[in-house]
Length: 537
Image (tube, rainbow, N blue to C red; front, side, top):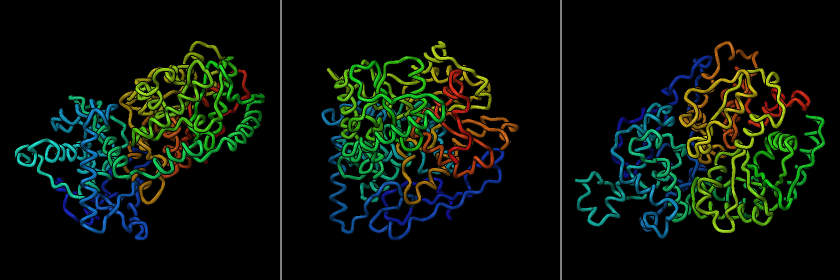
């Protein structure tokens, strides 16, 4: 495989592929993975490449067409420019125009963002994966093709770029080589948010050209609004799962708890990522144990969409974002609950609260709160009884980007873990400086073609190294059970796949799970052994 060029000046030329990732040049992993060798990223099979543009890096997680005729290419370029003008207008982009323009206008090209980006670092510092690289393509297009007189001054302003379909196809792919973790924005001395720019590029391609990752759009928000969940889980199937969870909960704890749903006037409407129902029902069971033990007046919803906090529109499109979150608000209002509590899902936190503040308006302005704040109150203020010695094994804590960096919820989860885990080990760095799991912005659910290979070897590589470094060498002995606490459903999906890829259970005995499982595992009034080691493997 070829080595990455040190600088790519022109992405508009029609070539087979600009860049090929050489996995043999990637940064080495720490002990005990110094000998780890990643296989090459496989090529997308010819039958799946047909009619698709893969000329950026040969990796495919979004289907970008390769038009047959010059007329079709020109038509798509014209639609992009029309959409770009909308993106830059207050009427059409009232949600994000101001921060977008601040990020477009104020970059001084210091590349501080690159040093903060795990994708750039773990790719072997590939030029195309610099946060600034994709953002500057958009800036140059705006300067040359949108600003009056831009074409005449393009060479003087550094905006001399040819707007071809090849340029745009690569830009579309580039917007899906970013987890939107916004670590770059935090590091930027000017406050430029390259993560936001990547997200707005995705929005432009989705809303104007119909180009979006299928897992986010067709099999994401569209399916969620039609069937009730992006997982395809229907209300009827949900009732069957509730029945199973009640039986499983009794087997695990000896308690008989009925899962409350559709209770009008409850204090709390608890809303989960529906992935928990299918993959990690013990997380939902743990919430039920804690809330019942604390005597809270709570409920869940069985109404279409109301039982799935997923809102993939956050990652790629405002229209779908608003449709889903307004449905959540409507359900909460109809139930007459006092507040909505978002369970362990990072992007659901941001969609319902940080961004939801612009949408949950008027009679739909139901208070929303993070589950982490409630858990802190219950555990730290000893409203439920815990025995930390039951959690006497090494534990480290992953910080979901949307909960920590985007919302500033840092200490509640830590106060809980410090209270119940005597062998708590902080990652370095942690809190707002922590690294993305590598599955952010929807990457965790993108399982097709060769994208998972890229996801594990590049963005996931930094998180796996960070996890290993959280424990001492003695603790990394496979005879020692270790727990990686990840209070986010999407992060758990990525971490599950990451630990499988790196064979982490067999080699170092690391198990992952949520925060509530740790809480129930040490509750004095609950039968010991809620966490079942090796149950996921």
